[in-house]
Image (cartoon, rainbow, N blue to C red; front, side):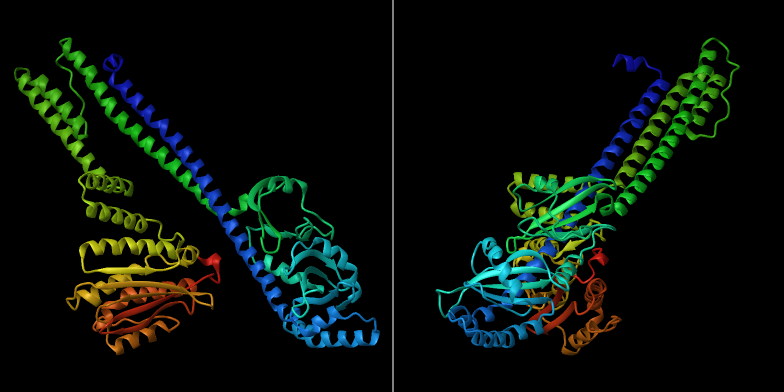
Length: 603
């Protein structure tokens, strides 16, 4: 501390600049590394989600094939085939012809993706729509691989004369006679399975491939051999886990591998993509941001250095002149300086030499002026800091108020502060970031919780399956304008006390999620509701009437509807189900899986 006291002003300022120059670049580099890590983690999560979608699609596909085969397994003709014991070739041919005509033909007509269907009895006699000889040859090997009866097992790729197929087989017992066991073999065209896997685009060169339970490759874009297997290095990384990720080094760079083993089909899906391709655009933006920050940092430090120099140089000049004055040279004069503070000091110094008899008074006035300048500088700094209040400061302030409310035992204030903080965090986030319906529900829960504290008469219900809506894409600030309309137009306008607000969601069979927002206030006139629904049905909504009652609603509702249509297209958006003296119900429809996920940017 004594060293600092004896240190010159110039050295103190140099030391201060060193403390500014060194930590800031270090902090910037740490921030850059953390950002890159977060970008890579988000890219990995996106790849895992894409693989889960493909796996779910394949599970649904194979389950649908199995469901379609149930009538065949329960057919009397199938039981007759399994129970026959004679070797009469004529009767066997007649029965085979009936099964092919009455059972196989209808299924093959409806499903072009099925190459062939075969039935094999315990005596290893087969009926097939493609080749009964090949079915009889495959029977022993397939029987050894089937683990449980009544469930399809994927056997892998089989080479047919004109194409490659994926063999599926199950053993079953005829319902008409439980003593006889048979095997059903279904040969799926591999092209349809490949098409499902190719629906996912991972970077520029990423791809998805698949292997069966015996680690035989069913499809790989770069493996042409029919007997290709999963690489040993991949199996070592996977171990006994059914899903996960790992990275491998290639000539092109580090590659991310995501694997998922299906519990239904025992198939293992793999995706491979270069990490540099997953986050290439975001990393480029991050690097550009770092360059811009570095340039700004350099310019700011250059400006700070110039300011420090502009302060120290005149002060050193003044110090030199004062030493001359102390030695008796009163003819020295400080040069003219345009700066307010430094110029004032120079003028004061010159005036001190000119009016030596008033030296004490001049020193006193100079001291007061200096302190006044310091107060102004601190006041300016305070205003500058107040003008730059950031969300982090507000979060800390709200948390402090919340802590004091808890200490004082005021649970209502604590709850309202907590809900207000949640709403603020949600609203100040990037408006273009992706949100899901669960985020909107949590946001409106905080809003309704605050309103319920304001209005004791208010009650609300939210009936949704949170596990379902966690994966349903939504648009930011969709529900709040609708609920605010309920308060403003359903209750406040008619001078009613807020009653009940209900939000109820349901997943419909057409893969559409419906969310109904209802209130118990007074609704709108029938012609107004009709104009709204007509406007909602238009491809481009241009509905606004500021002079009418509808004009007061149109900004919020039309804006929400337009944003939903812009993002998801038809038929999604808003629709007024009912509106009368008992209340209003507005329906919002969301897609379970948007049609163009690459266009989704969280509008």
